[in-house]
Length: 68
Image (cartoon, rainbow, N blue to C red; front, side, top):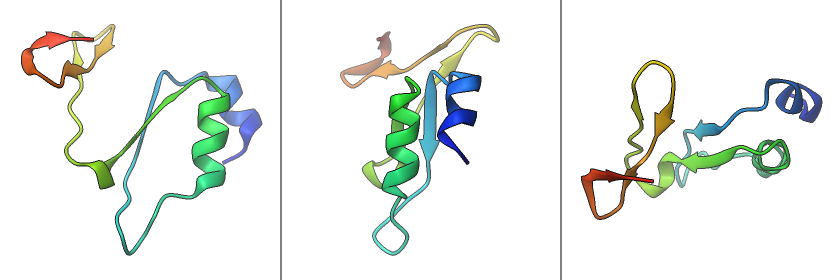
């Protein structure tokens, strides 16, 4: 994936699977961040997103009833 591609699709979020054995590629993370994406890594635990089919939100860390 190229930075130009990421900039053209303008992702809001990017979820990257990673762990100790297979870490994320920092070049990809940086390119996504430059394109404006919030990068979420599975190495940090479960990732939850809520969608109504139009918008996407993340549950607040304090509980599923809150979103940010």
